[in-house]
Amino acid sequence: MHGPDGTDYPNTIVFVEVDKPERIVLQHAVFPHFVGTATFEELDGKTKFTYSTLFETAAVFDEVKAYAVPGGEQTMDRLGVYVTSMC
Image (spheres, rainbow, N blue to C red):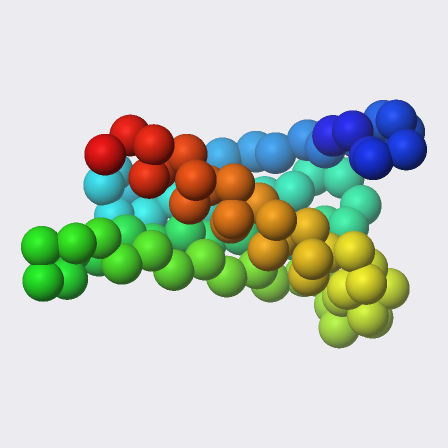
């Protein structure tokens, strides 16, 4: 991953479970350690997408939330633009 200042950050993702087309579970294998779960559900002819992140401890989340929360929001925004461009 590349920061806005050009810094490179380690970003190793391991896919723990892929249950196509309903669920993807991934593990962030470097600090901050977390498990992310994405679910996809058909709802009235559309797809409901839900994503949750579980950090290994509350202390880890407290340490990284200043950048993890906005970073996650930016990722979801980019995903929305990408998916919309496919339609």
